[in-house]
Length: 468
Image (cartoon, rainbow, N blue to C red):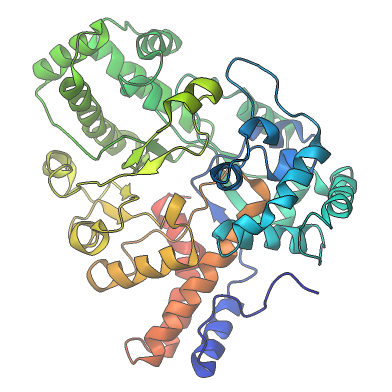
């Protein structure tokens, strides 16, 4: 029995469903453009076999383990590494059995669709995962992973990935990207510049990070001018490894545009460790505007995704470190927060700033009106908690009437879970096909226009926005 319904996510009414199916069929096999994500470039550099099914599907995927943890499953029992190097479960089969016993917790979630898609289309499984099928599925996937056609590069080609971007700290020397380039393999794996460790004073080890950062660039960390020069240097270095974008994960969308003297004084205070919370927030805001100005010079597309209260659980942060499923959405202001940046560069047609949100209440009230008038702004797709059928549908409903379709940037998968990439893009293509079919059925779009728009949403807008 197949795990996937061929008409999943399409409208129920048969006439609209038929049109959605026809639209989807035009892009279902189109190349994947993945301009924003967190796959490990080491996979493609070394091209080693994935260790076991648990290491592929469970331990690295916070979408999976956070749901199990919410029902009392200990992270150690799923193999999630501890910050202190303490003992955790290392037996892949044991982790997989525990995952299978709790697989029902993922019912009706996006993760369930992504996992079933990978199980069926990548590994050929046709029985639903459960405690009963755990060992058989583990053995089957493990046997597949031992074969050359399931190595990272082979899967990259099988998934029809045209280009994929990883995301690296400015402290990263990009050795895995260098290894990929020197290997002669033709897969296009590029980096993106993520300066959070050296622009966020609340980031762990900030002062040491800045000193190391300036050292890599040969600049003086005691000087604000030297600090900015280090950014220009590192951005240029990242561009030599294919970077076309920078990526900024700030707590808020606050921006500032201080005078050079004011900004230098703020930098000195932050670096001294004497800055209060308001001053640290002001520095982050100033750096967003500085990064936008640098993008005018070097052409990097700027991505801003604020609004996550990161690492919400102090005990989990202490025990397991960052990014363990405890990042929680929070209310976010864009209209007031972005005004200093937009006053400085908002009318620049050579600049692209892509806005993401975790606060859906801002779609119609703030984001769509902003993107619908400022030449530099584009709207990123539903992201993280809203990377789902419902989230994508709400996004299209609430933004299209004001921002249109062409002030959005298609889809990106933003994932560390490699085998979920085709599944995520498939969901986005199905939702967009359903949305366009509904517009046609309700007389808001001509059918021939829907067929023109479909490949734009599937991959063309992403190529254009990210300069790929």
